Image (cartoon, rainbow, N blue to C red; front, side, top):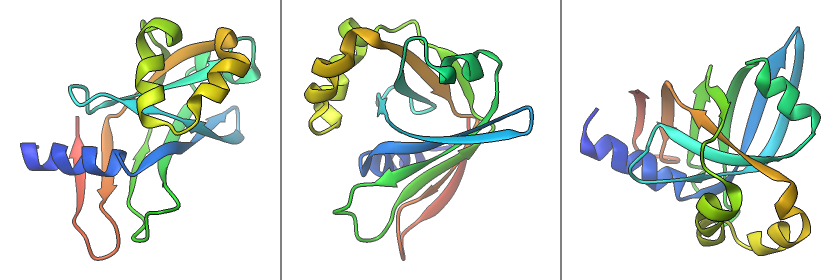
Length: 147
């Protein structure tokens, strides 16, 4: 993978602040739409939060098989996306308040409202990507990356 491939991945990350995260555990499928953030120096890692004590945490703890696809902003007319299968979901060493909140406020419109409503209840998780399909949109470049 070269620098241009990573730049394309980050360009497509920048077109979305939500993703659909699908899990499957014991033949039970589930999908959630969640906000996410990323850092340029970690192209293989996405961060998200979940509410402490929710059923989702139990599913993540059991290492459910998971897949995701980013959801482009409504203003994106060419439908760019990143899609990955068999991602790894783990609790993050980063905290929401100290580490991730500034990035959320930078990347996710109106996230302050979420933080004000339920911030203390949120716990940070990370998604490790192993291989991804990056589609920059209709008529644009498409690549597969392996980390």
